[in-house]
Image 1 (cartoon, rainbow over the protein chains, first blue to last red):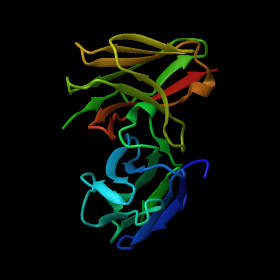
Image 2 (spheres, rainbow over the protein chains, first blue to last red; image 1 turned 120 degrees about the vertical axis):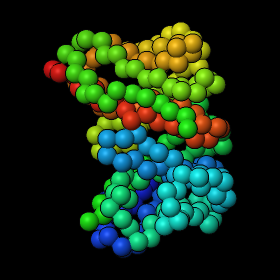
Image 3 (cartoon, one colour; image 1 turned 180 degrees about the vertical axis):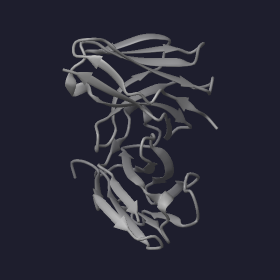
Image 4 (tube, helix red, strand yellow; image 1 turned 30 degrees about the vertical axis):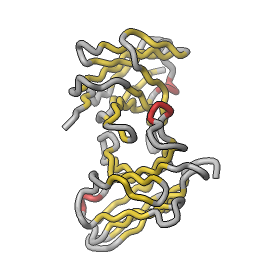
Length: 116
Length: 110
């Protein structure tokens, strides 16, 4: 596609519910990233995929968070037993090649998760 | 933990004025610096990058870097209401991820 597509755009979950957030990166982009942006804060790194390999998951806040990219294209971020502190915008970004910070990321429009 | 610090604002400037946005960083080894713009409810977009001490100009935008002071700034000349957004300073951490500041909210008053 022309850009990074994320769905759903908005998600309201009851505390304790599991959620799955989808990211469809730009076709051919090798690198895929998930960031979490809390209200009034900058984005914080969650995890990084190069093709289907998850090379860095150091930013995942707890073992309730799980991400996958099984075929090296679409990625899913899953949050189990959601808590109120999980409320944030979850941003997906992709880049054509690894290590291309110089060109910046292309971010998706994000999924705003509200846990009630 | 590497840190990137920004004043959260809001910074209010009249239309046509120069807006000055500032960022400090803790890692003396940082070599490159990036400014992203984020409109309300939208995703960040890259607007400027700078690698060398001094100034880098791109249209109405000028990035300034002082590595000795660990300070990077973004100047917006002839500010327009359409420049109203949050400006995020970002510093690479390794080869593939950024550390973002909290962002400075800019309001350009018509």
